Image (tube, rainbow, N blue to C red; front, side, top):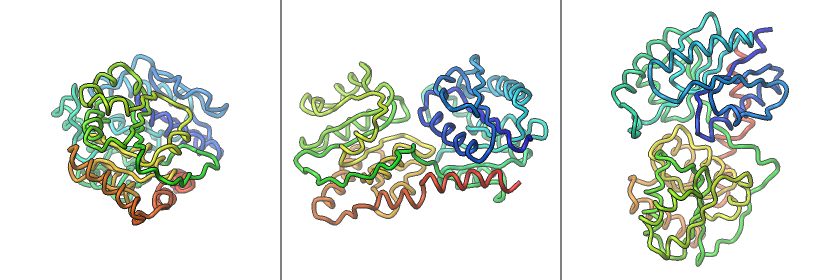
Length: 367
């Protein structure tokens, strides 16, 4: 019964969206009658309590680095996991997995994390990343595997890199976590006390420095709530103090990680994301679910999230541009010009769990 066995592989990662994505895909596959194994690294605990039909396989010596040595080690780990699971499908979560090539005769599905341009992270050798993408393009085209991209901009990047052909590539947007029967709270906004919400772990990608610079230029009636890993740490507080006046610092609420996200989405009036780059930000999708107007930088996924007047994309990655977007939305909300309900409509159009489930299963049903 190899056709009903799936091995999902993902890099060891501090990214909260990765376990959430893998958990959602696993639940969909189990519901459809599949047996699932998940190969991960030292963060295996993030995938705990996934049910009896999901088995976690850990490869604790692997690290999240872009190097040919790690790729070779991952390939060995994948081969071992395939032998243990007897899986007929190999679901590779992350673009560097293209370097595993076609392992045996397994039917590979590769979820590509391709950004609009290459992210210039500290510690990332840009030339090495370019070389890796070139090698990956060659191997993926040889493998004839299925490719998943998360946004229209990702799709354009894939086509430019010539990764696969049109029949290989599927555009499948992320979905948000299951909030059950929760409905958006369409509260009346107090324009003398406007609450901005940012949901993003404290790391370079999420660009909290730009967020604080923007917040410092907003009127004193604004409050900022920070939710996400390490957003209550001494380091982020120190960054905030360097970028904010004393009065503005006192208007920031440092929450950290929370399992009660509904409370914060319901408390907020606007959602803001200042990332340097994204695949497709799940927090932005969650904001749409709760019908919050979204202000975000021009990263991958911004077009879909801000579609149909659900939000505004900053023209530049500068505080003044983000400030203008925030104040424009507030002015339109105040005058009644902003269309309430646009966010939830956008969620239903692009990101609903039902649409995601149908698209994921189509990867398996057409074989």
